[in-house]
Length: 459
Length: 152
Image (cartoon, rainbow over all chains, first blue to last red; front, side, top):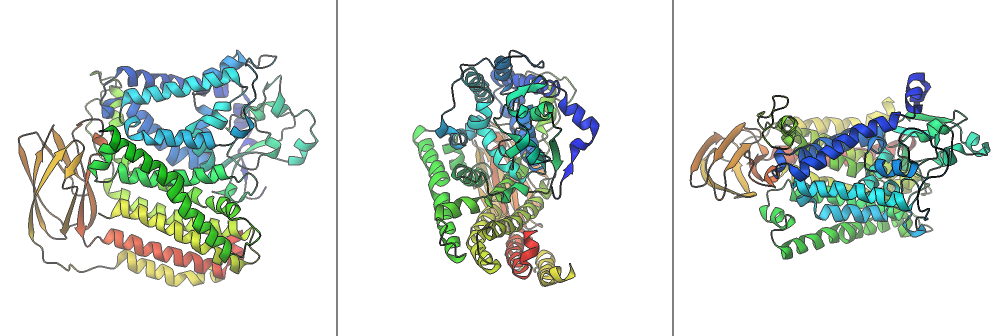
């Protein structure tokens, strides 16, 4: 493959990833912190800025996820995410060892109509509507974490493998979509080898390990969206045909196979939420925060309806018109507006990711110092484990944030325009038509960038 | 390579001009007395608009619980209890938007209790918008001149 650097060519990397205890060891560590976060949420101080659950989940974990893991390491978080672990261990009746026999579940089949990310879209939106509450109340955060782990266990009892991760997890949906941009991938070295290999151990499993828990056949893997980087296939492949590669940023955005309406909506929802959060949480308008914070039920109802309407109607509606204009200008008469809508929506993926990173800079830099005091006093009970309890709230480089946001947003805008041009060129007859077709989407992207800039830099 | 980059040179020059060109002060500096009331989880007024060079005298008061006033970019950090007032004085010598935030844990939405000081002319925003326009135009010119390179 072009422009790829295989990391698994190094024996120590491969040996480490093929060790069956690799993922369970990481899972046990993250499960410890996950349970600890729940305990601090339930039993610690209700003051969010002094509680481990809020600071380490919504600032430290979130910053690591959106600024580091997703852009550079794809679904690396899914590799170490503890939420599906108890359910998976229950299915296998084992943690590290490969037990012979089938998985212990009720063996129901996941409905065909739900084999997409619509559930994840709606789950994310449901959480997003309550985000002001979830992000600021330790006990609510703890309930959300508990609900997620219980849902994962419940689904593991009924269905085989990681149905929760693949089709339900509200976080996994956007991690998968944004992983299209990541600089890391797991792919087969030679697709023909997989095609010719009759036993398909990576799917069925063998004495070395289980079949892919993400229900993926690596031989046909062309995009990062559904690969949880659990490295199970690396363990079971008898043909030495699986590699983990470094690659250029955004390599999957141009893969036509797998593009779908649910993912297009995910891209729009994520973009809309980044804009809305920037306005609601970082803006100066106290009344909006009050409404989002459920000061009264009618106020919250208006906020929630507006939130949903912007996410599912307004922004998609405007983008639909944009796609219709693109179709006309690019001379794509034989392609439906829906198809163009889906295709060009993938240009919103880098824009959305950059928008989320820019949004995160605003509060991660400013509030990151809480982590030091919380580390010493995770429950807010007056402990001073590491002597940092009284470390004062100290905004980190607040002057630099605006400059970083400008650079990021402009780079994201340029990159997204190039991507949309390349996407349209996949169908347009000539370069000139693709160029014209890119104009409406570029207008949309520019309007989005302007809105971000206005929210971050103008009064 | 040179051929590909050549059309972008005017854009890069313009970008430098937009990013670095000095802008003269338009309005005469004045002294502004502003009362800012902090309450869970907002400041009133939420946005302060002043001109570069203005002397700002803020009388800070708290309506419900103890609040803080940390002003990004100016390093000001004051606290006020209900029933008290705090005088904050500074010269708005830096242009742009600067958030002021509560620096005393005051309730669940404390990390998002934010107000804005806009010091005109807001050059940061104006320059960013200018650079955005240039970026879009430059990208389209590049795509027009180098359609094949963009596809690689």
